[in-house]
Length: 464
Image (cartoon, rainbow, N blue to C red; front, side, top):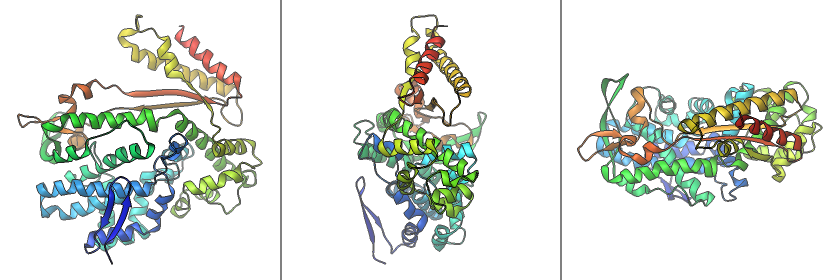
């Protein structure tokens, strides 16, 4: 087999040296149906409704994670040596296949799964199934009979924890180092730039203490940033954080996801009730098949973004009016109107008042009460679809893990004195960052009563 090359907009050439047993195996894994399916699943779901260039696929991202993992692994190899070759192979394979179980529109699809109890809508569970069984597992078995299970275990953070696990999943892993740069490039955003080469040039490996409840039980080798790269590490944390309010949590993107969730929930419920004829799709359509057999890996593999987009025109003519309306809205980008509850509450609560010392808690409490009141109103004014759809999300800029996995889940910094500490202890910038929270509500522009109700609920709450 000749050497294989893939041209990538972020990494330029991604090469597979098929003279090497591992990379020949991974190229064959790449040719399997489960991984090829990722060509038809976009990395950022509905973000293209806001950023037209954000059409990159999860396959492109997976290839980028593999390329980045190789760069990180070169640093690991210098420190760990050849005795860890099996772990290195496992981590590189995990980097390539870690996203194989994602469904159409990824996280929105998982929300549908949670509401309806669809087990394989969970991408981690689906990935585990695909890696351990079937065509992909057979391709990975070229590395040994237990290799596929070892890869799946590493992705699930099971078994022995070494520095190789940090390449796959940590605060500073190949996954984030690819999607941060790729999503920024493809959206055209000027936020979130990081000094990738300088970070790698100052990346070290050190043994850090691990334990439970402040009791040291041993050490584990993990990534450490040298003291010259502390500011680059700060920019990395800030850059990742900025992607959420500007791209991932954009109100239009989230609004489209809310429509998708309500649409798919209704489709599945009607199919389960034996009313397939109302949804506008034939009995043989993949969405119908998944609704009937959601625990089947084969039916789940039939789903991707193109299946859904292709179904919209058919469902826009559905006998069921909510399905027809929601399908037309997504097809034609006629999204619901967004009302930012948290912004309204924040503006109304005067920081000079007696609430100022604990303003964040006051805002959180008011938003929670507003949400409860809106849900009560929706229950009392029921329709085929919710007239007001609440959207809440939260993102921490930097999570410090505790317990035995803490050191491999945080960004460790080597100080000038040779000690190893969490970045948060050395960076006032990172330590000062607060969680990003959103509380919004969506409704039809035509439903003036619903929007007026949401506004009046907010006014009543902040005037207490």
